[in-house]
Length: 324
Ligand code: UT7
Image 1: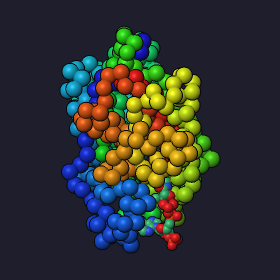
Image 2: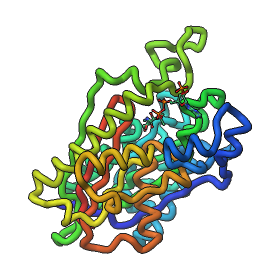
Image 3: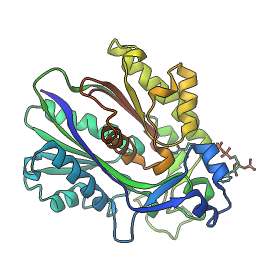
Image 4: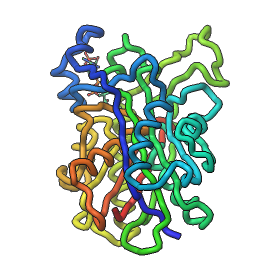
């Protein structure tokens, strides 16, 4: 049984934190941030909003567009690095309750910014089993809660948001997830990490940070390498060339990473959809937000060939080849 993306939905909080506002918080400025990242602003969740709340907003839109009811969902697969609660319950279970998805199983996936691409492939395989008809796949993040807002190296990069898709059985051949590549290089774990708060360093009384810390250069180099390789491998093993691809939807971390990847691979920059200017890096939510925005703008048409590609903490990487 094949799986296709039946609908998309996304949600970003109302509050816009501009580069100007950040300049009043840390020693930075719009010129540096925009020229080094392509980011102008990001959304920040309200004090009452956690990852599940953003996820519910995005999911309701995707469910409505798919013209199914919450009862029709067989499983919710939710990618996040900022769950409502540490460890458990899963954020997916909270979303399941809030949606009233009474027949749905629920679980979280942790693969950082690659999480949505991992979740999509996982959902595809549930559908391939033949027992699952509708899978709700979500990426949701409230990074503003795990960022040190006094650290200019990281606080300018991230934002909050959520995106969701309804993945459904497809009996026809035209529209489905063709292939995915999922990978990890755990030796790079120290380069992007939230050290304290887990079973290794459970309490904040250690000298380990409870916030995101990052070696930006290392992550940058990893990203440029794996994004290009993932795209070219997906093309190669499915006998397509870049000319066959309508859009590449990359993880929205930094425009310079996309530009460097385009230069390195010879892929025209225009093939890449980007919206980090408005939302910054929303980690696992960035690809489904981009898909939702593209659909809203009328950029996606049935039959289009799309590649999604992500990278992030782990260090992980992942990509999906989709016939829209
Ligand atoms: O989902 C994955 C998440 N992570 C990423 O995608 C990160 C990938 N890495 C990057 O995007 C880039 O490495 C950064 C945007 C993080 C940094 O850009 P860079 O061109 O690698 O800058 P840099 O770290 O080499 O820093 C250059 C200078 C430094 O000053 P000095 O030492 O040359 O005097 C930094 O202190 O820029 C300074 N700097 C800043 N200045 C103003 C670093 N952050 C800022 C800032 N505002 N926010």
